[in-house]
Image (cartoon, rainbow, N blue to C red; front, side, top):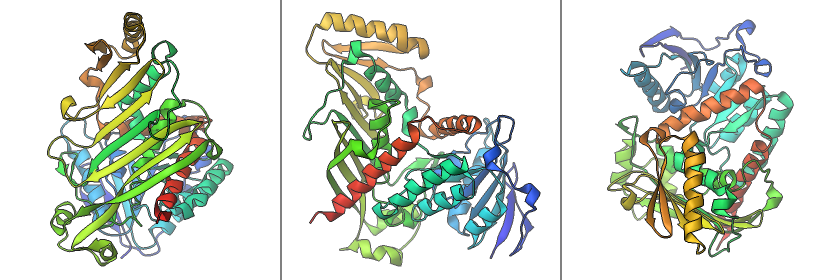
Length: 468
């Protein structure tokens, strides 16, 4: 059934109309190509199937209309998104006041394009059609803010490249949500790596000992916005969610480029993918049921079931050269972890020191940035490091302090106020994109680097699958 619903600021549902052919007046449509500083940004959420779609709206923005149009197929996924929005509206501290106008029906994409009720499409959900959604949205002159990944298969990579060309012709922006750029230890790792008196130069590394390493460990069972996360069954179908090597690895490949080569345009020709591997995480039916609420594997997952275990290709590793520097990214998914949550590891090897982020039990599962000296004048290095922290880092981030662990190792003591957490990073990304919308352009390096990022992940996926 095709229908419209409205969810008002207190989260109550009211049926506005039950119609099969309802349309809006032409005057209600928004012209995305004419956004100015005084215009109100109007969000359209398309097929929300991932909680990231709601996290974009965990806060309100002065330049964004609180009326959000939602187009989606009927089902539990859109209702889960709406429940999160309702929770944001009803919370005691800093409640939001979103009014969700919802259309559900099989023709949700066509209806969205027909009505053009906003100028910013937010995409976070099933990835099988995401590249198609992106292309059709920019073809229709709409800005797109998309959760990663924008593409999950080598076959659709050319479609994404074409979408960027179309967006340029239509004068609209296409951008992906790279939350990890806003984690404070990552920011400081990047800043210190650009201080030659501290870091020296980035080493070239080797395939066996890369100069840059980005690794992350995730879990299927987790808590979001204070509640156990219920995942849709398709999340475990790599033809719909994407393998780990093209999904979470997107963040890691992005960090390699963003940290090691800030502001530098990186093209496909600057990349050489040397090695790629993928492997499965095996889930029992009991584990699957715990995170989906389903008692059985859906039929479309049976092709991944062997010996009563659901085998999900959620893990991957890529070794490649970028601008003649060796890098490695690796992503691993477990069902659960006894303590802590998702963890991140990163190292940048410089000629004077290594900058290393660790997030294990020793760090109480909180990311900590270490500076490890590569044998030279230790006293002189410490003086320079303390001066850099006091005169540069602590000026921008008051309260940051340097702690000496040993003659060759230090770490940064970072005040809690800078550790805002993963969910808050969605607000930071959105605020950044809203500024880009006001200026009508992205930084010159962003588009070619996004294209190169997805070239790396899709090339690695093909390589891992082609192995005997």
